[in-house]
Amino acid sequence: MKISLLTLVYKRRPAILNMLRGLSEGRKLPAEVVIVHMNEPIYELAEYPFPVKEYTLSTSDTLPLAHARNFAVQKASFDNMIFLDADCIPAADFLEEYEHAFHTSDSLFSGRVAYLPKAVMQKPDLLQVMAQFGIPDPVRGGVDQYPFQLFWSLNFGCSKTTYTKIGGFDEDFSGYGAEDTDFGFSANKQQVELITINAMAYHQYHPSYDPPLNHLEAIVKNAIKFNAKWQTWPMEGWLKKFCAMGYTCFENGQLQILRLPGADEIAAALKER
Image (tube, rainbow, N blue to C red):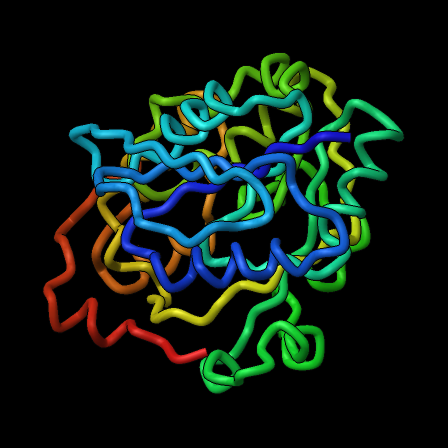
């Protein structure tokens, strides 16, 4: 079975090199890797034991995540596709797990993700010790089968037919937040089954923010769009934190930004994992 692996990248060269190394050392290789660079030039890459196709998507939106995923699907040569976040390194049996899933049904498949601590990233045998040091996702780690509300785009796969049936990613969502939750809701509406499989990917450490104040404006904008579409609020944990910190409020059921965080406030939200 030929499988296209698709990924989006923006200022993530070291991470994507680790991903490609992981794919190269896997027990099954992808038939191709499609890399969509969001508003940046393509990278000069070494040779790999599979074709690597790079494209640049230039838009007015710095992180056109929904648009870029739909663009990647257009560029994929094969019907069965895996989407893997640029920060993730696949386990050795990653492609095998997806291949088995694709043979069983034409569903939407979600793999699993564990997080690599900062100290592990410098180990020369990183690929060999990922399973030892990976920390399960705090929300999904103990969940056998993810409900559609917990769908996320770090690690998932489906056929082009299923992707089209779901409707692709809604490009009305721009920037960070809610576009993958919306995809899960759309899959459920179209009665596409979400099946969680044991295709493990290890998320590489990078600085992040809790809550993500650096994306507050986009998160609020996308949450409002999501609520108008589905009559429920996504990312409730983050929205509650924004309200508690005085950046936003709910007024008569409407989410509003009271003020944007300053650079010092964003820096204070930086977390070490």
